[in-house]
Image (cartoon, rainbow, N blue to C red; front, side):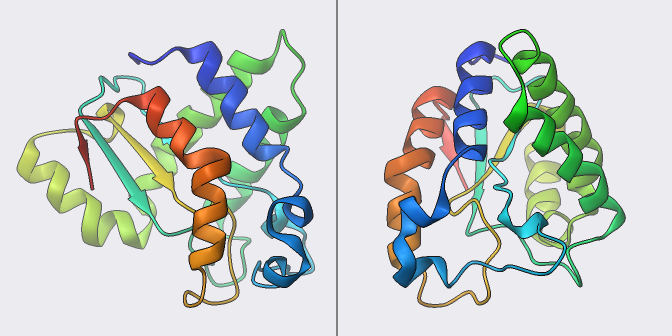
Length: 172
C-alpha cells in the first residue's frame, strides 16, 4: 500500500465515527436506510488493497442494500467496521488492516464487482489487491435518487480527503 497507512486508518475511523444527523441534518438523514438490526447506521468507508499503488480507484454511489443487510458478507464486515470505529490508538492500524483483509475476501462476491469491476480488472490485468474501492456516500440509503445533497456533503466531509490520500492515477 503506497498511501500512509496511519493517515488512512485515522481517516477511515473518522468516517465511521461521523454523526449522520450532524452531517446530513434531519432533512437529508431520512434518506438513510435504518433497518431494525441497526447495521445500516455504520458507515462503509471503502477498501484499500494490500498492493494498492495509486493506479486505480473505483468509486460507487453508495453501499448496496442487499436483501436484508444481514448477508454472510455483511456479518463479516460489520464487526470489523465496529472494531475500527472503536479502536484505540494502539489498535487502530491493526483494525484497519483487518477490515481491508476482510473486504479483499468479500468484495468479489458483490454484484457490482462481478458486473462492473471484475471485467475492468481483467482487461487491465489488475487484481483486487491492487485497487481501492470507495463509495461517494458511505451509508446505505432507502432509494438511489434525490441523493445529490448527500453526495455533496460526503464529498466535502470525507471522500475528497480519501482521494487526496490515495492519489489515484485513474478513477472509475
